[in-house]
Length: 265
Image: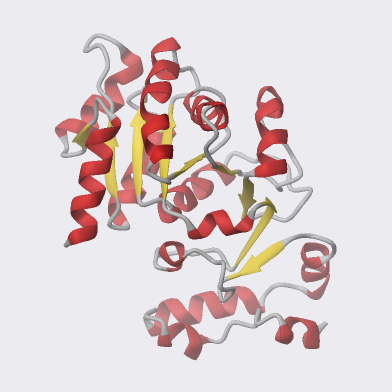
């Protein structure tokens, strides 16, 4: 077991983490967390599962830089998609037809510019975003709060199965992990950490998408928000984001111009 781990560069030392920019305190925290994993847990995780580690060449560089990067990422599908630029589209689970139409408006131009569409496979805007990418022959990544072998919610199964086959599903949880409430805020930090920017569509005032937007800001990512009807509670969170400085987004050009400008700085 120890030989196998060493060969895959999965033993993470504090000094190694400090060399790539972590503070001594943060490096030691990550190292201790890794050391506390029991051998039985490692065996369960490694088994037949597909995974990459923090030091794997396919681990996304942007994700390495967040405050609490996962040591392991489990996956099904095309892991090379993590090396392509991506835009996260997130929003309310109870999204309306307006949310679907917004996804259909934004996704094709983003795909045309070679962006991968990233989301969380949830009901509503997340599923709309994945479906739009699939319909428009783009690539999409689903970041889930379960093991990658579990589809949650069940209503997303048709999307989940297609993403597993030709796109990418990733998680920091080993196969067989069921959905738990605290998994999803943790999942949101991966969405915010991997993507170049996060676009919020139809989010209520207390939406989990606002957590993703806040995490994106904390990690230096650009945040975009799509306005809706001013009397609609479905868009109250988006309007608050715009008031707080998020880029008001009515077209994919708003996203592309901002990211192009930032890449030139």
